[in-house]
Image (cartoon, rainbow, N blue to C red):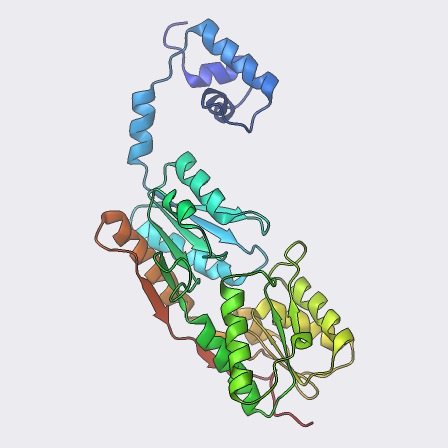
Length: 342
């Protein structure tokens, strides 16, 4: 059995090489009986893995991971593409890791960082409200992309984003300028401590500064167990709003939510924008081609993506300390909003 390789062990046990690797590394994601069979075969063959070669390969690997939380939010698709291109330019591979809404993205990041021997990591979506203890467990450089941390918990982390509070204030002010006073708001789950909270604060502050009472019944929060930033969630939440209260405008904190809301309004016989204006946030291409085309806050995706990659690579090289980069959003006025007629 001299010169036995991991491929030979896999062939003998009728499993894949990755399964043998998981058994050797005591990975939990393997059937106990299969694991026992593999370990027995290794013992019988006196197989000794070439750890030095394996570790050298891992250490030489140039890879970063992009953790995406909010699978339904198609806005992230373009950002992922930009990050992949920037990685390729630097000779890095880019590993895409989706995180369920109920999962803690930091727990996933810490695990993936160790398993994949990553050089760095990008968070797309999720929350910056994390304990210092958990942040300190992250052993590799990381950047929070599209997540504003300025003046908030987690401000010591590197981030690239728009100012969510400012941009949300801008959109609310725009709707107020069209004469709307009953502005409904579709947003993240109530316990969201990051983007959703900042955009809600921007909406509420704009109302208060224009002497318009903030009304909780006009705010519809996503259900953290059933909703994502998807068309379906926007559709469902608008149906819920229509049962509660009357309003002349709706501002949704993602274009996907806004487009779903438009569909629910149409099915309810409410014309957009003649009877109800609708506005979103992100600047997705889908909003440009939807009928009526969607008024939105456009995030500068290209700039954010390139800056995220550039900041991460500088952190990896030790050229940079964590800092926060803020980009200006652009209010795009389209067909889905109009002056209030009531």
